[in-house]
Amino acid sequence: MAMLDLDWFSAMRRAVEAHRALFEAEPTIAGRTAYEGVGEGGDHALVLDRRCEDAVFAELEKLHSDSGADFVAISEERGEVAFGDPSSPGRVVIDPIDGSLNVRRTLPSHSLSVAISSGPSMADVELGFVYEFGAAEEFTAKRGEGAWLGDRRLELEGPGYGLEVVGLESAEPARIAPVVGALAGSAYRVRVIGSIAITLAYVAAGRLDGMLSARPCRSVDAAAAQLLVSEAGGAVEFEGFDLGQADLGLDARYAVRAARNTELLESVRAAQERSPDA
Image 1: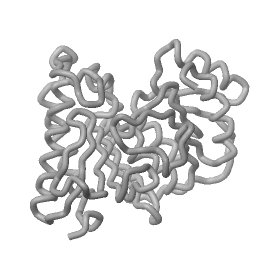
Image 2 (image 1 turned 90 degrees about the vertical axis):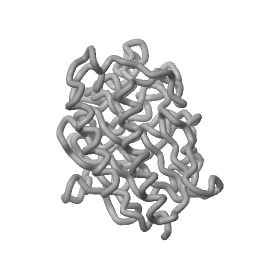
Image 3 (image 1 turned 135 degrees about the vertical axis):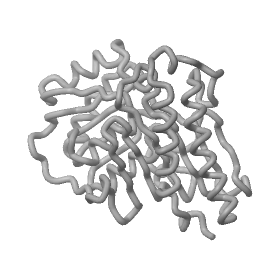
Image 4 (image 1 turned 180 degrees about the vertical axis):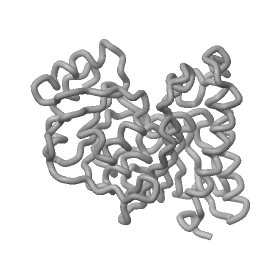
């Protein structure tokens, strides 16, 4: 069976249920503040990060063994793991917990983000899945077919009120201060959610008029949700890279920005260029 013919969304929904059980089993900040080494993405890994990743990989193993389809998983903790032929062009890009600080501090906004790609770049992503645990919302996208929040198709509309609400990510004070200053006069309010995948999904849903990262992000943070924005009719880009150049490898780093349309993206771009890493 071809990789793209597999029932990826059902597999990820099972992973969501496994994640929810893990969160319910460890409800305290103290209990969630347990680390287990350093992940392949370079960050200290929570025990919860690894257990959530295990749940996703259990679903990947079942898909591979049941179908014989070959693909390479790219995940924040384990790095690159081949299921079958390691030369297969298919990629599964996973962030088992996007918003690890939120989940550690028992803040509700964190997500499971999974992208299914037919090749090595953001332009090759065919399916996107983002589950937001705080609101219990599922965002999905299929290249060329659209994006959905649950069963509702997402279709971004016209200019509205401009940059009424902008999402900021990677919100270290020293990094966001110049960005916030650059947004003065063009944005009415800012919001910091703590998950790049959720913030991009909120752009796709029209809840945010734009978003930007104040520092470079990894492929696992944005691969699934950037497709949500594009398929909903919005605009998304990675600073310095065309989508076809934005690699899905775990070592790739790039600043991401998005907006409801190209006009608003220009305003977001101007603010992002004021960040320390611009």
